[in-house]
Length: 248
Image 1: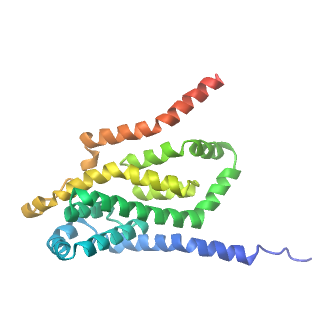
Image 2: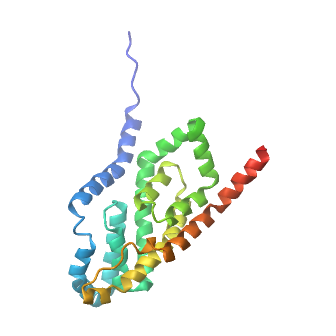
Image 3: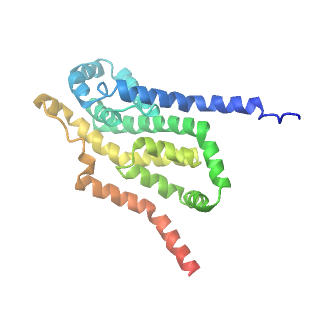
């Protein structure tokens, strides 16, 4: 009996190549969570703040470039310390251009991991969802009809982990342009809050105090963010109720 030929080697090799970036990111993220947590902490920033400020004063353009490149790498490899990086941007560069540096770097890093995840496994997952039936197919169709609302909502709600908000759209077949726009605009409110907090770290360092890193969960900030998230979901709610009325 003639054995059934296996799948072509070229497509299999191509899939392996596409998955290398996301595998590398997963390995680096795991290693970073174990070995870099103490180095990417507020205590480390407090210990090194004087040297960082001196380097910024002596080499401002280089300091800005190195900071943004480090922030991009931190987000792209899902390393711990994104919040500390945002505070650092505010401490070194003030509310402006600090918030601009923070949003650009975080958005670029998010795009890199989004592309890596989509190329590695996202395309396959999205294709399977499109071919599937039942609840998963309805979920995917609903998302496709309301991508803008969904993407803005997961960026604006503070409890959604940043890594998850980068990976989930890649697995659901979201377009790159929509992901980029909603990422940059969606993280802006939170970036403003923590960049502003970082801009005031000089006084805290002088007193030996620590900032309130849970600031974004206080009602004065959380309620407006949740309001923006609810507003972003309003088009989906309207479509849903119109659909319910049409079915009645």
